[in-house]
Amino acid sequence: MFIKSILDNHSLITAILAWFIAQILKPPVEYLRKGTWNWGYLLSAGGMPSSHSALMVGAALGIGLHDGFNSPVFTIAIAITMIVVYDAAGVRREAGRHAEKINILINELLSGHPISDKELREVIGHTPLEVLGGVILGIVVSFLYWWKMG
Image (cartoon, rainbow, N blue to C red):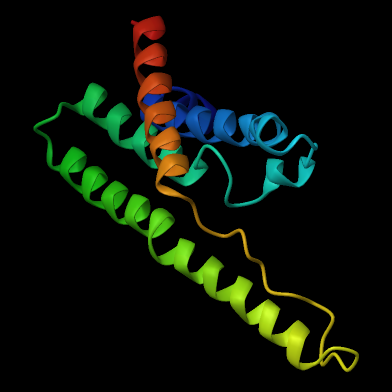
């Protein structure tokens, strides 16, 4: 019964599908951009397309298509989606830039005398284009899923 109710939750399925496809697309997109394979993108934040944006847009649009675009649940889904998208392109992107600058400072100031050899993660946010890619992916996956499932 539990599994059946999850499989019947079409909004959840569209959200997970959008996230999964975004994660799968990251290594090939990075290969096209940089010419080298980085399989670490399969399980990491950052990169093109934004899986956070795809997940939330897939969920919100799935809710709208299932429960109606005038439902209070859709309103909350859109509000949360806006926060996640803003965070992905804004706050997390700036945190990544700060990490990059701090890593440069540490390498310059402590050259030869490292306090820690572990650098801060620099790719934790998204460019606006990466977020847009996630938003578009979320929309496409949701509409294709709902079209296919009728």
